[in-house]
Structure formats: C-alpha cells, structure tokens
Length: 242
Image 1: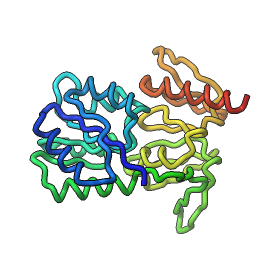
Image 2: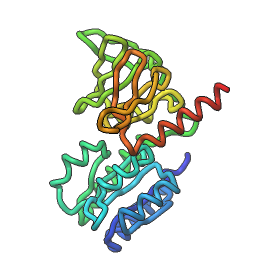
Image 3: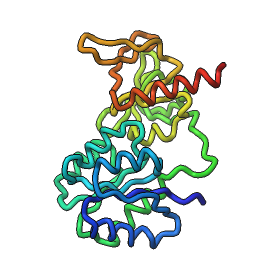
Image 4: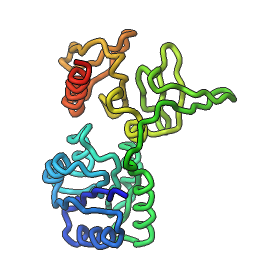
C-alpha cells in the first residue's frame, strides 16, 4: 500500500510533537513536512503535494482558513483541523475539512479521525468514476459523469447540472473532485466544478473578475486561487489532443 503523505501545521512546537508522535504509530503514514506558520505551510504543501494535512486553525498572520484559501486547487484532498476551541467546528465543515481534533489531543479520537482519513485516501491504480448513482423521486438514476455540465455546492449536497435538469447528490465537492476524472473536470471555485469540454470561453465581468462561460451560456465565477489550475488543465488537454 502506498503510504499517506502527511503534513503537520501548528505554530506550537508541543502540539506538532504530539501529532507527530501519534502519526508515527501508524506505518501507513509518511510525514513529509512540518510547519510552524501558515505562510510556511503554503510553500511546503505546494512543494510536497501531501494527501493529508493536520492544520492548526489559530496561527498569527495567516490562520488555517487563510492557508486553504491561498492554496485553492493546491490544497490537500483531506484536511483535519487542529484547534483548542470547538467553536470553529462549523466553519471547518463549511470548507469541507474531513474533521477536527481538539487540543489537548484525545488519543482515541485522534486515531479514529486518522482511520477515516486513511479510508478516503486514493488507492494505487484507482480509476476515476464514470457513473454516479443518484436517487430521485423514488427512482435510482445511473448518471454518466461525461453528461454533467457543471457541479454546484448546495449545503451537504452537490447539484449536478445536466442540460436543463438538476440532480441532487449527497456528496461533498472535495470527494467529487477526487472521484471525477481530473482530465475532464476542474474546480474553479469553492462552490463550483466544471466539465472542461463544456467551457466555451473565459470572460471578464464589469468588476474585472474572470468568469467561465459554458456552451449553454451559463456564467460561473472563476476564483483567483483556482485560475492557474484551470489554465494548467487546458494546457494539458491541448497537449494531449495535439
């Protein structure tokens, strides 16, 4: 089994040491970086491309939420927030963190969260899904991924836009982003994933912000933190097709 590449981010040396000790008990985990600040974490995560990150919420100048916002598409697939206050729990789930652990750490709770993270880690040779099972009006619909125009976050659900129809799927955007073919689907905003084959053009609105325009005329905001990744995906598609 491929080991889960993990980064630890916390401005408290004792907290980092505690996380490291707990992670070192698991032979499936490989620690590829430790950071004492949010600014350092951004550089380390971009360079090491970890599968999992234990990310402190409260850090001076650049907190855990700032780190994820800055990383955009470069954010790890799985994030566990580390905090001394459970008041951040709701916001952690809003940014689709897997879970959070409280300081001082409860070993049992920590290991349960780690097991969840391991269960979601990509398996070697794992293929992107080509069909999604959607329950609608008492029916089960087998939806081809290639038919999806774009996906929109909707609380605990995702809205799958297929032509003039919308299907609701109880799955997070982070999970869908991991499951779908990255050569076809690209996240352009925290709340939107697009099928690249449906993109007609990039436009600039009256405020100077970029928008992704789909073939049917739908206009979607392109977040600045995801802009570089979108261009990279299009460059990759042009290279493959050419």
